[in-house]
Image 1 (tube, rainbow, N blue to C red):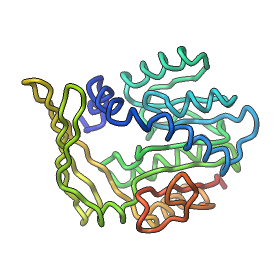
Image 2 (image 1 turned 30 degrees about the vertical axis):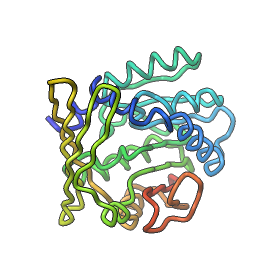
Image 3 (image 1 turned 180 degrees about the vertical axis):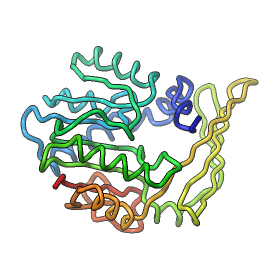
Image 4 (image 1 turned 30 degrees about the horizontal axis):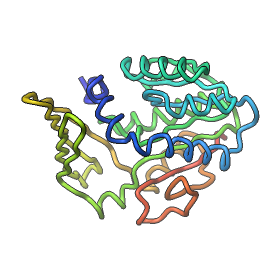
Length: 248
């Protein structure tokens, strides 16, 4: 079993929800504003939120009148997304599956992949296969938005240990960088009362050049790239790599 198949469970949802609660709504609105300002979707455009998690972007975009499909592997997170969409009074189509095997063809005007949900796999060819599936899912001329960690920023600001504290838990993140293979390997230790739970996380971290080359191989033409959702130019001091590409 690969790490991502059991990482996103109910406990992890509660951890992420609490740790990012204060900035979640603000960042979601800012990121969806970016989508509208940069990609300029037409009214009622069809958008695929790839690795949608509990649906924060899917729901916000549906509120803005777009036809949204959320796709994720985690049944736990999709159940949350369904509940939140119902509470928000919007319709979001939710699909469970592996992003290496997207079941769509020429369907979407826009595909988004936000919050470092790319690079999960051990095999290098799998990442290219994901991008090829994204290209297949897009209509000709459709746009893909990728938001991931800036590999160069991470190397310069790397911390091997980081503590986070919630209302009833402590979380210790122990990390290491494998620069030979450009991977970030982490162990997350959740402490709640007298109980301990360990999660493993493994992420392929890409340079901007690597991502641009992969997209070219997948028939995705890079149009622009940014360092954050305020549309600032990309550089080594920004912690995000945000790429906008077009299906050709």
